[in-house]
Image 1 (spheres, one colour):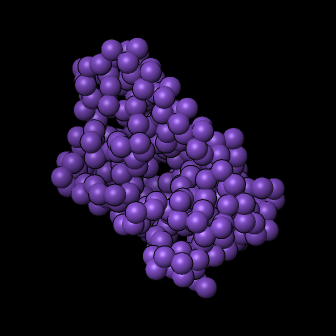
Image 2: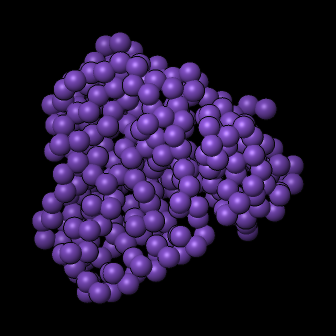
Length: 291
């Protein structure tokens, strides 16, 4: 496994922003992953996994951490009957293709989530009524001390949250799917993708949803739209004119621009609705949502 220094995160994130990672590696096996985690612990470095680079906002000045992108056997996908077994670096798109081809349903909701299995488990990712808590059986979690399986109950999956913490990486996960006609699966996927394309800025550079939906009659997007924020711009970043819970790179954006938009959005939601919005995106490096 090759360790690199100073790798620009802008080329690894879907928003296209972020400075260099102090260290970067692409572990291809459990052994590689354990060695990488031990390397980080010995140097007291935090660990971040980028996956496809969505749901991540990295500091412009760089990230003093070991950043990982899982590959090889850690991105492999196989089917064992109705069980979908996938590495943490496996993309949702590949997993969905394998499940659909085998006539296995239950994973269709992930067609609206441009990410990886590891990220899905860690944040209990979800869309259109489905999430990881409904399909995951257990996850193989790696730390600097070794690897071990966590059952669904031990993962403590809740809304955009899990028990996976600092220094822990989802190396593999098993998902329980169910038999379903292939044409029915295809129809569901087509409907979800059309819904997503109609509502979200899928042809723009974003990092995905900015804020979690609050306990309010309005979701985050509708709330920020009511605050008049659609199209609001700071520097090279703007709140999407199509969906107010997305931030677009409108050209030359910096992570600092996105953070400034998030601060302004939280301020307006607090003043107009008395709601404290909680960000869904993971912040890497020295990024703070302070007014």
